[in-house]
Image (cartoon, rainbow, N blue to C red):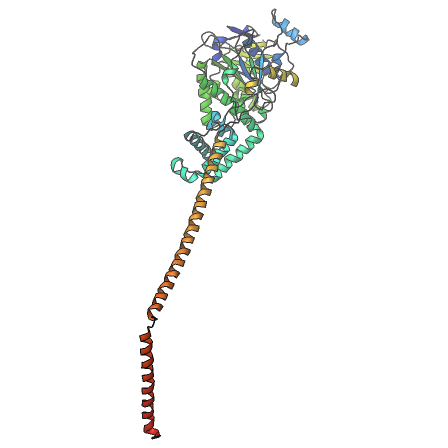
Amino acid sequence: MEFVIGKGDNLATLKASKMNRHGIIAGATGTGKTVTLKVIAEQLSKSGIPVFLSDIKGDLSSAAKKGEVNEKIAQRVNALGLEDYETRAFPIALWDVYGTDGIPVRITVSEMGPIILSQLLGLNETQEGILNIAFKLADDEQLLLIDLKDLRAMLNYVAARADELRELYGNITVQSVGAILRSLLVLEQQGGNQFFGEPSFEIDDLFKQDANGYGVINVLASEKLFLNPKLYAAFLLWFLSELYEKMPEVGDLPAPKMVFFFDEAHVLFNHTSSEVLEKIELIIRLIRSKGISIFFVTQNPTDIPDKIGSQLGNRIQHGLRAFTPKEQKTVNAVAETFRQTPEQNLTQRLTQLEVGEAIVSFLDDSGTPTVADVVKIYPPESSFSPLDALEKQQIINQSEFYDKYADAIDRESAHEQLNALNAQMEAQREQEERALQEQKEFEKQQKELEKQQAQAQKQAEREVRQAATRRTETPVDKLTKNIMGSVGREVGRVITRGILGMFSGKK
């Protein structure tokens, strides 16, 4: 299976069996990259191969409408000798992270994972470590991380248990947790609440054909998404990871199972950590065995790291600008990446290409890059006019996936689980406090009772002592007491008179 996308000295023939060696479409703004992308996507669709592409400018939805042969198109068709050229519409599916210009695309926080999420949030090494702890603890305690409120609850949970977790995972600071939470707030304000959630997007839904056997062109609405380059890059990196992890090994197929076009590819590599770059490089190298072909679309091919650029065997280079020494150096570097004859001066030719012209080099049957050729790209068969809002909504409403993804689902996850745990712990604390208060009250009452008992005991003992010293007198006791009293008094008088008489004489 072959796809002819243009004509120069020879036909620009892209072999389906070599597309899993990936490719690049590069060129300055306005040189025709989007048209080239669209022509390849249309030919793939006609061959039954589904396509996924990001629509940065909002004009790729036009593939759903039949093209019109105007004067400019007619001239190009005649110049290229396209006798069988025919305009047509192609089956498309519209997807949108924000759910306004397509079927909502959602993924869970767990599916995104701590590495890509750290890249998205711009975390430093310490903060990334804490985020990894949050994910590990969520896995260990079976707490579902679905949306951003789940992740926020999990981070607060980690902070609350910091002293305990330090012994297992290392230092956890409140300041670092706070920084992550602030980054989450910014992400929410940029639309992260719509992106993270359920039902989660399933990669298998992209591998579809219509009733005529045409592969569906899946268009991701990226005009708004691209305003947040980090979120855009994070989603497409997750997408690549999902394809790699979910698709089975198939080896070298006669044609790819799907082709993925990554527009404005340079954002994937801007400010990207070495760990993420290694992950991207690994995916690009190994995903070919999954039957997936990737085309990077970018203005400057030098934006692609060398280790990844070396894996892009199929090259389409539109015109470049060279007004400064730095730009001239870039042109020289790009020209050297092509296999060329001594007679060709690609450095000069790159700056002279007209709109719709490109220097191409594709892999031949042996996997060797063909000699570079300057070709005119075929015109697309679909319209150049993008869909209006009503036309988009009609496609969305008629999608077989509308009922599956339209409404968000908020099931019980970490946020609810931790809230329930906190409520349970709060109820337990209140119960313990009540029990403690009741115990204190009981002890107070016991002390008061003991005090009263002690006082009663002392009073009883006092009364016993008083009773012992105050016995009840019998009649004999009273008689004896009276007699003794009278005798005592009489003796007293005698003694007194006797004594006095010694001084006063007889009376």
